[in-house]
Image 1 (cartoon, rainbow, N blue to C red):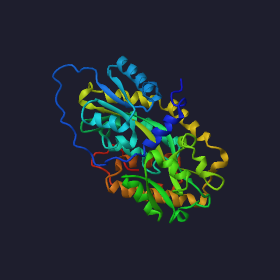
Image 2: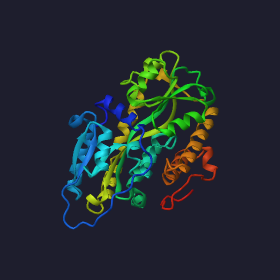
Image 3: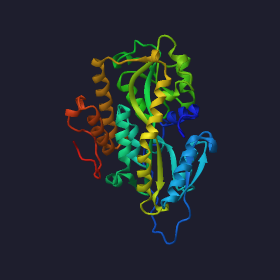
Image 4: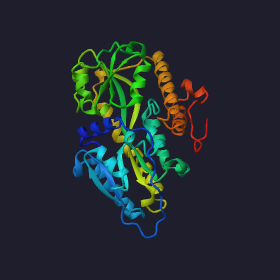
Length: 361
């Protein structure tokens, strides 16, 4: 059964939630104590706006069944508020968390950087990158303190929506009003970098601001098109620029000390094994946007976009927002699927942590 397709409203919210602001500073990791007795079955906080009837919770239940069969049992506990789920995980009420990538970044900066701007340009790159999350070679970066990544799932591409199709280059974005999610410093910096004007927004009013003309540009996942009625903002003059600026992910984070040794690796391998099926469902979402709404980027303008996104990744890695080791991995992936990219001949400039199992090209 395809668990991703039935509830588009939920998926739109989930994907937008991946751009929610959060404190990017890493919280102090809890002390890891040796286990003196067998663990009770761990509980995982699962964010699903539709509660026990939602597809995310159903997916977590499938993973729980797989876990019980393979020696890493856990019990999913549903939450309809992502912030509350993350907080309960952080203070120890839950032993794991299933939530959007940016929300989980403070628990694992490596996996949390998979949503970086322009890092994964197409779904072929997404497949390669997310399947690699199951590799034992990445174990050193899958664990940070007492937090371990249990898997990463794709939730589609985010695109630039414009009210006027004449805004077809970065230069023409200068001076335009662009929605920036409140307290997300990285979004604001990117908008200012192209000379545009950031306008503070929240997830719950992003679509409304675009539709009523309060802003000229927003960045949103394709699955938000119909539920947020973004066609009302596009009208006849606007469109969706056919160049993904980010790939949205949904992530599983475990409190390592509450699971038997090796549980994280087993779960990552299982999620990676299911990746082609999950990605096939996600790819279909772009097709919900009518062909007439898409705006193609001229080939001679694409290098400008790629260069801007590369500079943003470099700068944000130096500022500690993105993990340089994850960016190195995605650089290798991009150059594997698109070897003609100009960056493939440029030296690496990311700030890479001391522990990085991904070798430089």
